[in-house]
Image 1: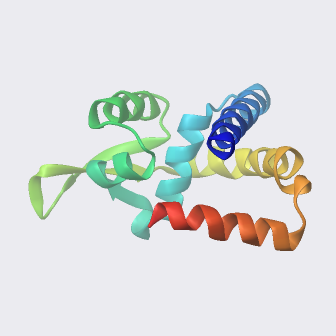
Image 2: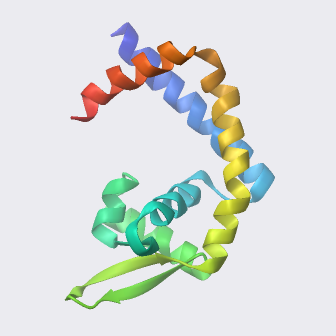
Length: 136
């Protein structure tokens, strides 16, 4: 239980710090950044809503509300799936790509400052291996 609690507490504190810093310096909430990263890494810079919801760990309704806000900000666009009339893609716009490009250095600096610097290379590798077991 000690390891579990330490993991939960560290995760909560890290994501709060990273989110606060990212939003203060770039105006971009961490949840928005997460969506933009997943879209930027996807083939064609787009994902089906269902796949994106799984990637960012949100319910379909939670993602719908988030995508509504991202669309209103011009950072993503909804596009119909040509192969499935019921499906919708979310696609990264040029404005979204630019916001992500501007925010990434802030986020990466925060990860290094609040997380990475606490581990040696072998420790970080071991941690990634251990956490990887849970994801299987």
